[in-house]
Image (tube, rainbow, N blue to C red):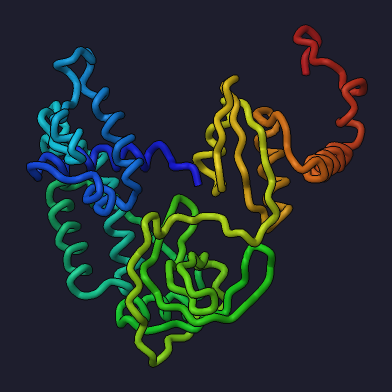
Length: 334
């Protein structure tokens, strides 16, 4: 899927911090460290090379040793203070306290003793630093799962045991499978179990609120190295391929929607390819972004969305006919 701008900014800052602590690192080493391709590392370095502090004159920019870079080794020569210790405002400190309290309360059961202690130690130090403001924070984090499912996930992750899941996908098709859990993943709206699914012999993300039942098995989970980009939802090949042509103002769709490919066009517009399992999801997306959409292929999908839009409009009855709506007269009142 298209990378979110915020994710890339975090990686760019991480590259600067990593290189500041090392004399140099090969492009391949950086790719392994940050879970991206060598080509992406080189693109990131090219971006950092023209980034810096306000003024943006040559001496305001982050700099690297060019001769080392030509040999495939990245060596930072000027960080422009990007690695100075972070100073938190009171608001930022409270936000971190809230996050750590939610993590400790909602997910601590999935952590081993060492990691749980790290979370609690950091929480105690931040709470002391924030002071009285920390006392106003009261948050909770839930997995949006049945209590028995959440308990099974926590147990299997903590003890390293295999899970047997009954799961329903976006197409409302249920299945049963054995899964070696790897970790829990959360984004803005959802929580997922990242695991190795033995039914397909590969990594899969399982939306926690779609797990109907989970049972911890006696069999230990096998270790599976996390693939680059693991934990990010990517569309599979089991859905219909749909292409949406969007104006440049619709760039948010490529950043917030699981897309298979993005193609930038010369006029500033772009196309995205989507694998669609649920037609209802696609209809919702197209109607939501109608003002930015220039074309939808295949034409049958566009016709179906148009039919849905006309049916929704018809539901408004007389209000759907502009000729029957009396214009507002500011002199006559509402």
